Image (cartoon, rainbow, N blue to C red; front, side, top):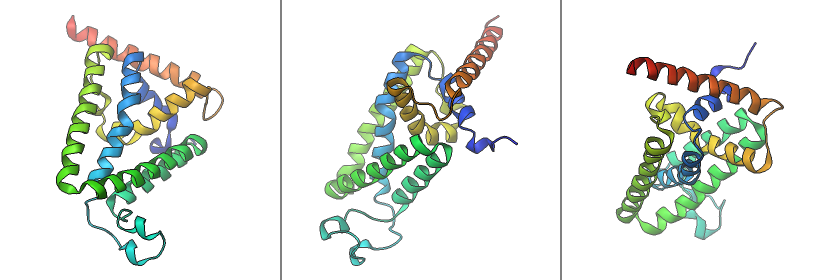
Length: 202
């Protein structure tokens, strides 16, 4: 029996890769995807807290006001655990990055305060999203993946950017033959998209 579709890393990565085959578009996403996640956590900081850590004694006093257990921490932990389930090695690194982003975003949010933080987040998000849409429009010449599958594109993008970097720099594969199988699926999906596009034009 194969893996459940939600946990099928091969198909997830092939879906993402079919929308990101141009080197410049890949670079743009490498630069902008994690900042989108990070700045989103800055806004999450201002959601209601599940509990007050200032009375827990878990962290030194300087940490208490910043590290709030709320939707931001819950989202970071849940996403990190999901990545670990997908692939233990790369997923563990992604989970650590998620937690590091939560800690960093929490301190920045606490320092800025809501009235300034949302403006910083707005500018950052506009810059990052504009860069990615331009990457798709100018270099990839294909609409972003989120237009076809919003949840998959948003939730999986940070992990796939990291996995792409690990593959490019270190030749990392979750298991032998992973990249070869994914590349074959990507080529098939791109060909299917190009054929549909051609039919619409003719």
